Length: 168
Picture 1 (cartoon, rainbow, N blue to C red):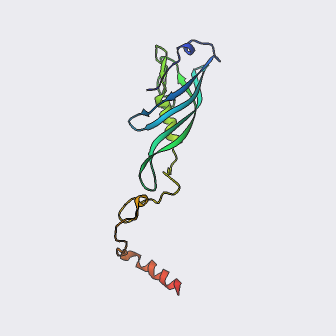
Picture 2 (picture 1 turned 135 degrees about the horizontal axis):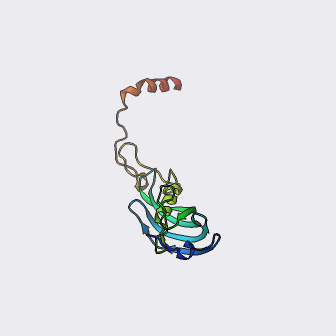
């Protein structure tokens, strides 16, 4: 949970604002593991809720698409969304609301922004060698011990013959 007290903005005039600085250590959910969460959030009372804006820095645990090793990917989150007022219905478009006592859990909102900020093809290092196509061994840990002289699938013979004939 990332609970923020927004009670001063619930009954405030439109345009009132407050800011907080987040400096959290590890944040974990069932599907995400963040090494830290740092940044500044600005809250502004708007007509239908509280606008939350800010820039957050974190490192999220993900898996390298080349070698399948877990690692932490640096991610910058640019937040800009509405937090509903007490009593409002939660929807997929507005997953956070202020409770009756003035507190809001921003974790569902931050979780959404982290998911869309993770690179599609995250790579642990530009020098990552990936995995062996035959045995699946991690080539970053050394050469694999599999036998690379496995027979070629006979369905590919026609293409191999075309390649051999183009060499002549």
